[in-house]
Length: 402
Image 1 (spheres, rainbow, N blue to C red):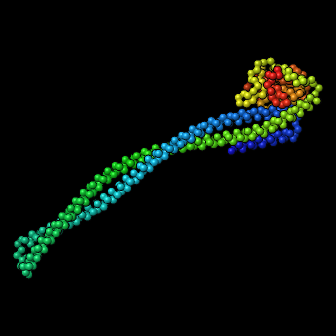
Image 2 (spheres, rainbow, N blue to C red; image 1 turned 60 degrees about the vertical axis):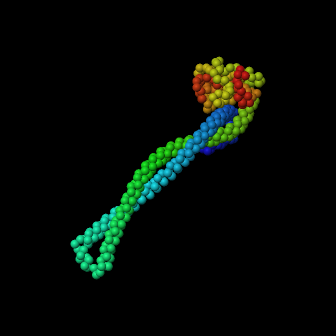
Image 3 (cartoon, rainbow, N blue to C red; image 1 turned 90 degrees about the vertical axis):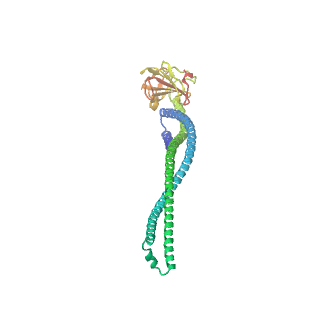
């Protein structure tokens, strides 16, 4: 969105500059310079739009691949989480069982302690009862017998003592049996708890390991999701920039058409005001300098090269390709020091990257007259002459006119 806003602002700025340019009705040289600047900008923007389209295609393919990997990782995460869920359920069950066994052992311990106390009491009572019977059957039996009111009472007392002793013995035996049963149950419960604790440890270890697997898979998935989001944002930005670039191209093409009309007007004025003999549209032009063509007319490095480059040393005299009127002489951004000559009938030539200029706007020049000296100004990688031929403001291949 920021890229698109910046692009639209650039378009607005360009349109504003155009409106100011046209409103001010500048000299023909300034119009020609603006036409060249706009055409260069259009070519640059077309290259940028094409590059943005290629980038968008690459990122779209990368997004498709990343989306597939995200789906695969998500499937792995889901499968491992399902296994983790099972293990966590088993762990909860194991811990619940351990808690139950712990409570059972605690209850059994309390009960065993109580039964042990009861058993000690029962033994004491049984011992006392046996001692009492023994004492009754001893030397004092006669006293016991004489102390009874009748023989029936004697039998009743002896039978009572016997029954009490047998009852105490049964109680002691029952308590002992209960105590031994509880002790045995507690031993079995403790053994079960040891086994349950081993199961809980094993399940807990497996659960921890499974959580690690899930965590690593989730981290990998999240990293890919973040990469996908970043690429999606980049793609959106590229598409927005491309849209704004295409919009700017449309606007600049309108500017270029308007400027071409201004150039034609300037050429018409120059043709009526200057007393020169312009070629009658034959297209016969002389070479401005003598040297090899190091770069031809056409698309170069993703942008349009609207002339030819002629390799010469710095300071080489540059000659007019034909007689005409200078309609631009000065600095122009990437062209550096630039001279533009109108030859009439819609034909003009341009000489760029000069170290110095000899002529000024409005000057009439003859074919072969020195107009500048070659150099390395503007967007240039070495001394040479950039030579353009334009027909009604539009760049054409100079080799067709030399």
